[in-house]
Image 1 (tube, one colour):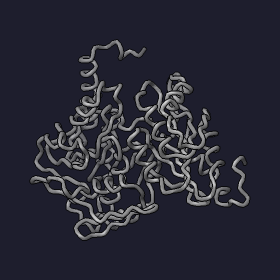
Image 2 (cartoon, rainbow, N blue to C red):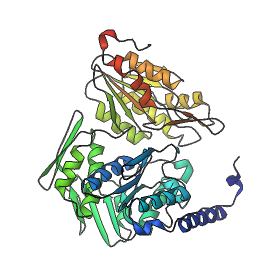
Image 3 (cartoon, rainbow, N blue to C red):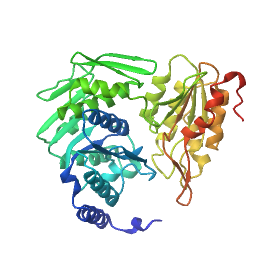
Image 4 (spheres, rainbow, N blue to C red):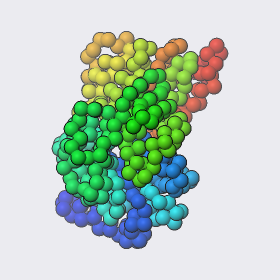
Length: 427
């Protein structure tokens, strides 16, 4: 049991609130000297931050950004090794202070529901808040999907300046109800009732291979990213940029140079077979990734689920989705925390009822599971490794973290993978 389990909720809330105030006070309320952009939603936050950053930098601005991938101030960056998407109150305020000292005009922050519950967003003067999408996640933590949504909505209640909302998401009407001086909406649904809000619409969509193409107001965008979800991520970034007076042409040039986002549908290898690493860890995101990669080739997935009592409901569902799209399934460890990894995998397996899959393996050692997937793959196949993305740690029992990288395990094999005639994955 943890100490906070014995503290009444109202006292815990005050504890988090006071620490948020002290953090802002000690560092001089730095957000007041920045234009702060907060991005929230279930999926796409980190990618949207990266795309927004490259556009604003292309427009000539100095930018700071904090996401689950990395912290960046101007040209200096470091990996986010906290195993925490949104830093604690003092770390966050210190980051903003550094951004001010570095001469940044913008700070882009990934805002999580957990962070909001702990008042980490308090005393940050947000100029723009963005809603990307919403799907069930952290249900045990919040108690229900409605409470999870309500936690996200706090950001829109507190910021009354500019709200940018993905109106293709079925929860958008809920977020549109909160008052703000300006609303800017985006999507690809031409039949949506836009009322009086300004709407950024992408049309003439083309999703082929590892590229996406779309058009906004007769400006053609060509990105080296894949998946329909990355059109939405791009639209969110473009909407932010347009609200700041950045032209569509500048957005086009900036986004056209983006090659990859670490651990987000990141193509590690093209031939002799494709290897992709992605952060997908919810049923909805997992299905979107599998659907994007299902192009007639054999799909081999390496799949796990987070422990620590988090969202146990999703485990059978993820197994069911894997069986729907993948020809070979390798279940493996992810972040077990204090849970029994075998029990987690058993719960995932319980959802695999569809007999369409050809092979099911359970390989507890995640490195061995990845190697097995690579060894199994043949020419033209696709290996998709999900759950950790670019995370640098694996969380195990007794609050321990061990260094980890799905991407590095694949990279270690890259040279041999590029030479199929002399290839031996066990070397």
